[in-house]
Amino acid sequence: MTPTTARTSQSAFDGSRLRVILLLDLYEGAQQQFLEAYEVMRRQVAGVPGHISDQLCQSIENPSQWLITSEWESAPPFLAWVSSEEHVETVKPMHSCVRDTRSMRYSILRETGAQRPATPEAPAASRTAARVGDGVTRHALTFTVRPGSESKVAELLAGYESPEAQVDENTRLRRTSLFMHGNRVVRAVEVEGDLLVALRHVARQPEVQAVEEAINPYLEQDRDLSDPESARVFFTRAALPAVHHVVSGGPKPAGLRRHALYYPAKPGLGMELARLLAEQDEAAAEDPKSPVYGSTLFSRDDIVVRLIDITADLDADPVASLGVKGAGKASELERLLDGPAIGVEGALDTERNINRLLSHADMLPVTDRTSGDS
Image (cartoon, rainbow, N blue to C red):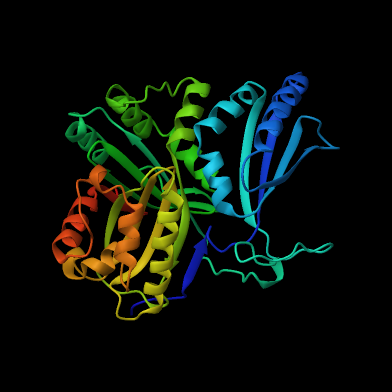
């Protein structure tokens, strides 16, 4: 019997204000160095568009434990800041002070006290609807390899032995999907439970460490995973956050096919392009005739990757597969997309160019493993 799923929708584009919580465990004796680094960061982030406020707190029970909270007008400006090279450089002085960190991000749905006036971009918290999730956290990494090494890297990445799916009683690796577009690699993971615990579990596995070591010579950005600072900077720059996820309700169709589509945006327009695709995928989830059953959007800087599960061949309905169904949507995508970067120039008002874009955006599948695969 085909299992029935509830319609799920998780999004950074709901317009609600964002609360970011950063838990830190400092090395003993590093407090003053940390405070000085925090002051530099505080002054810089105060001028970032979309930033409202932040607080620095120290535990009254364990002085080595600290908490930074910040409030933002919405998720997109925070994601743009945290993905920027400026952020990477700003937080570097903190790294030598911190033994461990944990970052959490929450939409503000309800609050007491003085209410800020609502705006179209930031509706009042009392009007922001709670979304229904599925207990799964989605995250991706992206990096580039040296041109000419693509086939060797694909071979290495496809050949590793999957780590044990069950991490602990609360955390499980659900699925790992890996794709390439030219020399760009995208690895998407789905985790039940604690994402950080799962990622650390995977990183400790000898078979994973061997693969990571084997691809090091082919990376365009050098890294040394035995050096905590080098590893931290690499994974910070490689992070490709999920900004939208939606799955249609009703019975899950048999034979779903997973594809990843790559949409390079024009400079500065990545988040706007991701928002356009998110709106399209929300509409598709409401349309029982749409071949797109589920979608996850990942976005960082001018990179947008759309992971879709579809019920038919990708080219059976190119407009739906690309996420441009509806009047004027193809022209909106054309305005935001860096066509030459993906090898498609000209207006997206012809069937030929739509098909060319779909062909050029479709990423090469390297591996797709669900829990239980070996």
